Image (cartoon, rainbow, N blue to C red; front, side, top):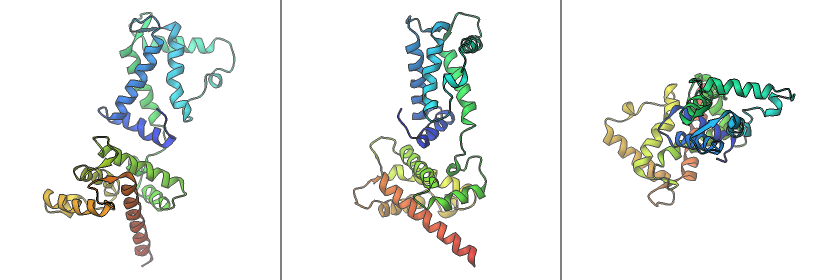
Length: 253
């Protein structure tokens, strides 16, 4: 699960908000793997003696991105505080007063904990979730500078749109997948009235798909019937730069 911090933020948000997503499956497999490795007796259970190793392995992932302290930072003194805290957490997970926890209990505890942590992540401005129109516009204006951190956020947002549309996982988007990708990418600007809804732009679905086919051909620079991520990225960034420049001209009038 090697990821940049931006990729991890997108991944963990998607895993928690979209139960049927690839990210959700990846997170499940990760938590499952942690549980299985702590189940040394191969009983489908983890006992208190192995609970510390279970927590330690699971915490390695968020810790890699600065979202979890080390054990030494949490318990600087060797006074048994860590063991007491682990026993308390173990008892909270094990609500049936047994001497072990099950996979179901572990997953329930982990997902609840992760859900709380996701709320503390930096705002996902490009998605338009929990941000104002002003915040969105400020990020988009800064994102036209390819050396800025805002451009990195834009890059990973466009990457997510592309990956979500690439349902056959071949690294390209065909004409059928393209329409979905455009709709997802346009959702945030539409939220703030910065882009029209499809139903206001086209008389019907057939007209929308006809226009999308034309856009697809414009983006398909090598005319191979599919769009690669670099083609999507280049087209989208140029489109956004054009919109930002147009906003500046309008504001000067």
